[in-house]
Length: 380
Image 1: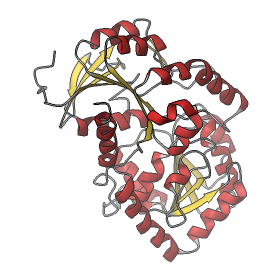
Image 2: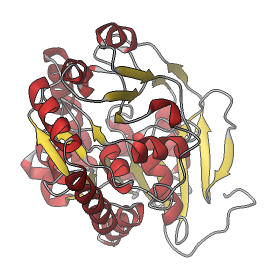
Image 3: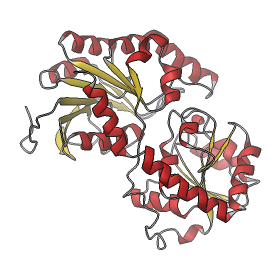
């Protein structure tokens, strides 16, 4: 059963499953949107999600049929649970109903859906895939690390066993999350960026004049992003610093910020975001845990040199040609790396050019969609 303005393609009937989707657009939601609209050119793609406030129950988005089930969305949760989180007691029934229409179910979240959903789909003869957008927590804080490990050891492993194929957004995510017995059916499918949306030739002169010369950072204001270490480093960085983000630590981080730091805590358009990357003298993210690090791709696409930490998937993105890597929790190393880029405009320019070339070669959404096509073809 398809909506009237959806044309049945000759390819597979694919159902992407995730708690949220457009108009809510976090990193996972952007991944599904960009990959899904490319897959929809050759396949029928359904997105099965929960209903975000004011969003319609059914609609077509970028060639994908979007079905939103009822759920109570929790926006405030105790540490270490990250909001938003849906409560949907009828999730299994919704998924089983959708099994009448789709050949393949591709889950993008292992924390919200029950093992029973995966088992029931397998009993019905459906292919089941999973993308790991989140690695096993390591290095955030003892409570978060222990809770994440407990979940994967007692629930995640059962889910992994039910999957026909597993994708991970980085090699580090695959190796730190999956037990050895499941790695034979796993592959890496990196996130991407739209080069047409992140183009260093964009005219941003009218939108960013108020900031002058600045270093940029972008991420949720939560513990895993390590912003308190960037704020400590800011005291020794020879530049104004602009941080874009919202999250649980907003008030605390603002209290810690020195005078050369400005926060932007309201949402900005994709165009303004690209301009912030492009106008910055450098981009820095002081993460303690980062399964991938999409913000680095966006900065590199705008030919901005980057500074990141040696955690998670970041070293798979950031090479010495495009920026600098520093140890986590090291404000002195962060400041030294940023200042070294600021002190050499010629070096910064070379890094910027190399960064965009690296994205063009390895990290576009077309590459991501091709990775999924290869993964699906291996099921036949």
